[in-house]
Image (cartoon, one colour):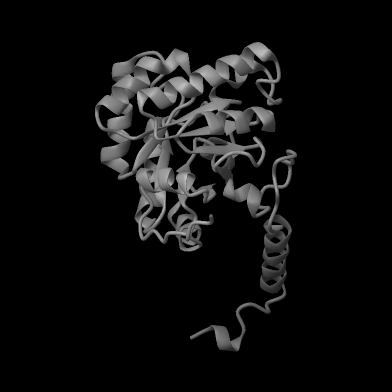
Length: 272
């Protein structure tokens, strides 16, 4: 029996659990600034992720590792001011939660107080158990992230698909159940076999959002700059480009340069 789609004026962690229970897929996109977040929010995206991917997309770093807690708070506060409907989840950056659960809590509190974000996201399983427990214990919603965890890229040495081997797949399933038991409200699975992702999504009661994890999960997330085609050198199998803004923006800017050089811009109607 189909369930009528519920309209949410403001998406919360409780809303996401309801969506999973009702079989409604969850949409999630990144945003890092006010203008983009305003567009994404108006399009009724359920979750806006202020991802540490800002390190790559906005700052031009090779990995997500260099971005700081202060920078994440800056990006998150810009997004929060734009989001009227979406749940805003903020990545806690590398080095701000892994080694010390007390530091993890301090980082999470700073994000919540200074940015106004609604929840935080952390990468890892058993190795960050104490940090997750302490953050949730303070009343802060936490989303987990398993599979390919970009903050650990130098440990992996590659961005290839994770958990293809039985031992790693078994550990991932255990970590997912552990994060659910600790009280995480949701989970991101990145770049793992679709069959495994579906199995995990069916084994937990919390929403599972995939990126490169097939269609058997409860929702999907993409980097908005990739979806819009603003980036053009990143072409993984899981990415569907809905526009080619790189070419369109390049053409528009080139035309502007030509109009300035030829003295066509501004014309009589474009001046006072």
